[in-house]
Image (cartoon, rainbow, N blue to C red; front, top):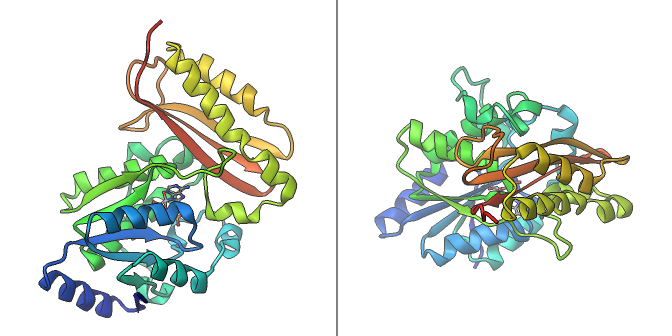
Length: 287
Ligand code: AMP
């Protein structure tokens, strides 16, 4: 089945409204395109839940802190649409920038403390941009459910806070990270890695696993965990560890003592490509 490709907000509203009138619940999978198996997992989950599935494809300029990153971001609309067709997506909302931002917005969403650390610390304005576009997408598509990857754990936390703080009538579903066989989390930015960089890139996940192992063994000192994980990553050229942090899984604030559910998150530069990943440590198993 070929999805309905919608470039205008008005047509998207009309399609969603018709689907809802026909008795469907509406699912939204927001993406920036260059779709891969990670995105496919989100779409499959949305499909399994038996809804009218809308995938948005929009490279949101508001969330890019570096112009070169926005410029170099991969755009593969044709194969994206093929993937959407093969996964039974009902509608693809693929607006141009002028449709989403006909003028510079005077009202945007400002994200508070949940964005203070991790990527929020190193990418000024990034999560304000994410929250603003997610708010707009929710107003346009009016989904009952929206699907986000755990790969972007801080983004998922930001979206959960957005929904809670603005009483948005949408259920947020988090989906487990899809990885390559060597552990590297799938990402549209992986396409930029050359052969040698690709070989080194799984170091980030290896470090995070080391952290998870220590925590599972009962280590509660975040500093000890971070040092061991960073050593495992061995941040040497062309690798540069931007951050590696242990945070509370709900509010994304760094912890010194690990007493509950935490996320260990890192950002690694591999050459000129920035990769992020994280693991959630649900249980502290004391020795
Ligand atoms: P993006 O196109 O990178 O903005 O990602 C769109 C959605 O797909 C976000 O909710 C991401 O968290 C999710 N996503 C990206 N990569 C993965 C992955 N490897 N596993 C699961 N979800 C992912």
